[in-house]
Length: 359
Image (cartoon, rainbow, N blue to C red; front, side, top):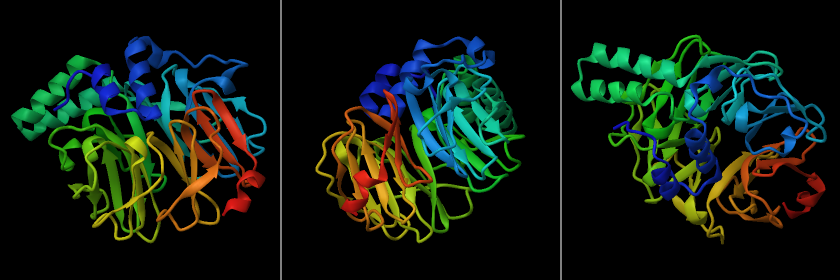
């Protein structure tokens, strides 16, 4: 059931950096005016709290608090700030080409760029999300869905989106708190609430969504694992090897998956989630981010700044380098092979010479 977003619940359920920051800022900045207030340009933006980073072709795009979006065209050596129409913290970003991408964040915000992240337009916010859910519930005639949608409208735009996945320029999903998920089939020109298509009766938080093999997968709190085998039309719950929260996952074309969460818990599946094997990380802190490298290796990061490398596609990991000394919320491999880490202290760039010998 969708209820009032609770910071206390989030703190107890999520030690992972991305959701802690999402919940904290959602409570600290309730003003709807921020949905129409452009992000402030700042010379200190690269040291702000950043929550995600990705590639847009040869460009790097990092997003974070107060609507900050940073761009780099030299593998993370220098950065500049983009123009963004909202001052809402952004939690995730994805580009499907060098030009076209999306970012999501607090208050149900979905942003779209057609110029490699230089400028952004708002496609969706929490006010519109609630109205869409209400309209669909009224058509369904389902009393429970109608009650949940009415509560979503009454709550206002207080629920963040925490991740997104686009398979191409038209088809994508955004997921977030209390089971919130929407789908688009036209590049975000229109959105359809998709909560009723998930096997998630308790409305558990959805933290990550990725494709692997022929399936689409979602992870969330309390060990939630969902898989779609029908191109995202419906999602069924999988048997979970773990009762704690999963904060993210990575998949590949072979159908292999790595899911990660609280207290250093990492699990690997070689059969699209039918079975899972626990991976010993040697850590007791939350795993907060992952990224594939150009050679197929996988890097995992922890909330404490630990970095782990898997040359075996996620089936085993070893320490990559000494912890960087600050929380990591997002990772991306730069065009020159360096590793870009974002988090509480902003941007960190690790030279490829620091870890290439460890592979």
